[in-house]
Amino acid sequence: MLDPGDLRPAPPPDVPIALSRARRPSADVSRALYAVVGARVCWTDRFGWTHDDWRAWVDRPELGVWLALADGTLAGFFEIEAQPGGDTEIHLVGLTPEFVGAGNGGHLVTECVRRAWERGRTWAEHTGPAARVWLRTSTLDHPNALANYRRRGFRVASETTFAKTVPDPRYAPWPLPHDPRAARVPADRSEQELIP
Image (tube, rainbow, N blue to C red; front, side, top):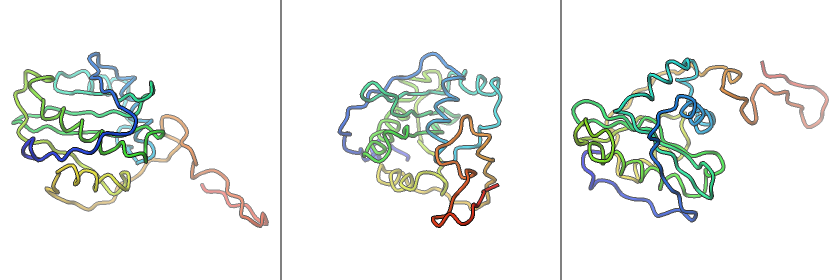
């Protein structure tokens, strides 16, 4: 997205969502957000990060993290980085499981993009204004993610195809629901299949 006017806002959600920028960087909070939002859509690149890696990532003035709250509950978050030359990358944007599927994703992306274009004014003041807002997604993301980004006004700048090794789900920060390694019992119960 090359201009703030390119943003096509989503309609507001049924339940109001309040946004708050995290003004105190927290490696623990960011790690927990990454896990709760990303575990179901294969955010795995940071699974191997140490606490020091997380602290180094979040404790930078060019990184902004916003929390989304609805009905007194954490509904999601987004993470934006002010990069050199006016590039502003949306690293992460997503909802907690309880808020997926109710039309909240478009609103969260809308508000994330608005904050990205405010770079240099309301956050990362030392970096200057945004000239471009961009993000990456993949086929492992939520099935509606790419369509949502396009509806908000993003255009595909480039595409690559490559295999991604997905870590064993046992290494997730906490057990995932419907763990694929769990025992499966066929309907006729004549045999039991175990997924290694």
